[in-house]
Structures are given as structure tokens and as C-alpha cells.
Image 1 (cartoon, rainbow, N blue to C red):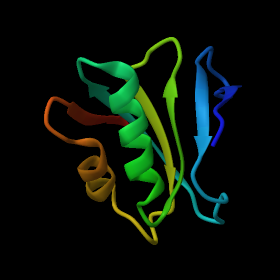
Image 2: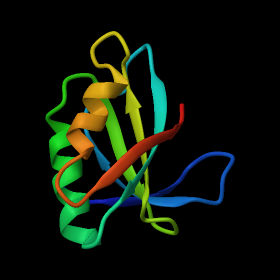
Image 3: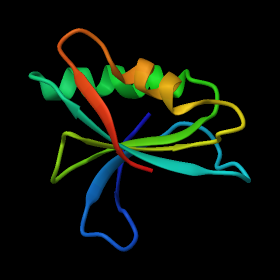
Image 4: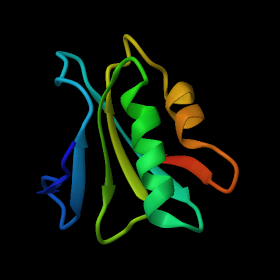
Length: 99
């Protein structure tokens, strides 16, 4: 799957977007701060895990702020705790900083 550059509306944040699923009727957006040492490989593994999480519609890391992860999800199918479980792994410190 190929990443595409996209700007988040009403911000100056440009992200590499890897689409996960189609956009649902009900959607929430979580902004997650995920700090880790080796950026690229960990980011791809996190996005792969999120892609497999039922209810996650889209997940993108910011190009300018690579520790910021924006996740679109359907709260009817997934809770924010499950999304954090998909992001958290050894060497990664993650927390929700906005919804």
C-alpha cells in the first residue's frame, strides 16, 4: 500500500496517510502522542496493527511531528483503549492527547 501526503484540515500538519478502511457514518478522531526511538519501522508496525483493528478507519503519522498519530475510528466498533493497545509496545510510550 502506498502512502499519500495529505494536510489535516484547519492545521498546518502534513501527514503520510495509509488508508485503513472506508470512512464510516459515525467517526471519532483521536490524537495520540507515541514516542519511540526508531521511528520508521515502528511507525509501519503500528499502522499495520491499527489496520487490523476492527473499527479503525484511518491512521496517519504527522510528517512535521512524527510522534503525533491521528486515528479516525468508529466508536460503535472499537474503544480508545483498544487503539492504545495496538499502539503500545515495548519501547513505545503512547497516550491520547486529544479526541
